[in-house]
Length: 401
Image (cartoon, rainbow, N blue to C red; front, side, top):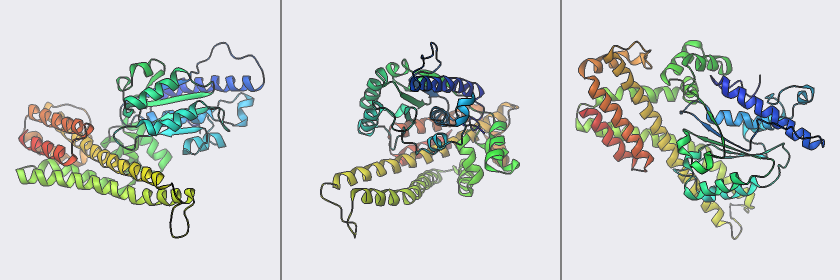
């Protein structure tokens, strides 16, 4: 078992990262023992991980961070870093390592204030680990100011600092930043590979794992959630019933409201699980008196926390909507496959009756227009259009398509 084992279907990427981690280990060891530094190294100070949703780019970056922080004694005997069990690997994978800082968007953008402390930390030496690692999970969400802050840090990095940036595609990152990074592109893993991972690592029954992997078309995180969360399966079933309900304007508007309400409920549940705990921990850190009264001068800190939680709820709602839109896209993709007589495996075999009905009652051209309407809805949500308006426009287009 190593840190690379959970990178499903990414053998080439794992090999590149493993080689870089070995060279990084040699660099740190040589510096600590006053030995000559290796003349050639596959290690570099900045990496850009790209790939489609579900390919595992964040997991690849975190696995690499763990390998860089590996302190397994086997390394001294010629073993490769990235054992997966030592304190360095374990804490890096869990996200609790003191020298691995993770930045993730809690709203539509990563603001410069969200990056300021992290950029400052990137210029310091590691406290306990072998490297100072900055992992930006949503590099495509850096706005102009925060991207410029990252650029300055990547241009002139500290000797033991490594930047790991993750984005859907290389075009989503500023040319000035990506030109200073080593680029690794991950591919969507095969359905069989994802199903095997669910069985092997999560103990899922083979039939359930295969169905989840097929329904999500190789999206690792969504497949795991679908296989392990009954509520997620219920929401997907409701989404797959939606196309047959859009027979009149009222039904379209009702379906749109239900989709938005379901996404809002998801966001509310997450907030209930995390916001209260975060608030109490922050109050304790600020030295709140008995009864919850805060010391003077700390109101601004609590306001910043509330703003962050509000932005996170908004993003969670949009992410939940995006999952529903992905399921709808997969549904109409199956309809199109039936209409064209394609032999590709259906992602939604459990909804075959509905697929057959729509395939017979519409044309391939109308199915393509419906898929385009879903894509337009996703683009509108990315532009911060009000979710209900965007989804209503989509359901009306699905009916007219």
